[in-house]
Length: 138
Image 1: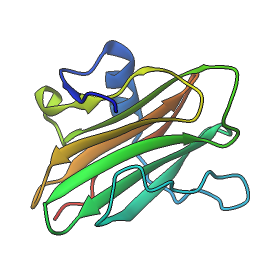
Image 2: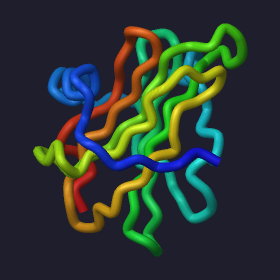
Image 3: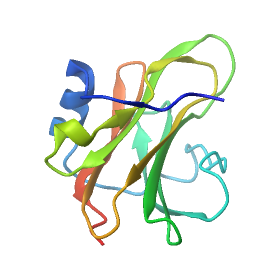
């Protein structure tokens, strides 16, 4: 089980949040499907292509008020690839939670208590980025 680490975004992560301004739904033909990694009670709020390499998913649990993000490769397995999943309160770098590393299948899940607040969420695979800023305010 992965340990969640709370820390400020790395320079690369900050660039992802700063440059990802538009939210789009991933295209079903080339997109990975959500794998349930966040656990029971989480519903997918949004997804975004991570280039042609995978999909980042933002989920939410109504019971706990937590958001969860997971980044999933389209073609899991070897070789091991640099990946990241991240979420933060919009405009608050100090609230960022990430899971950077070298993975074969997915990065995350990462969780953030965000009931009633807007979030920035992102995914990275290799040098490709996806996600959205200032979204899903609730």
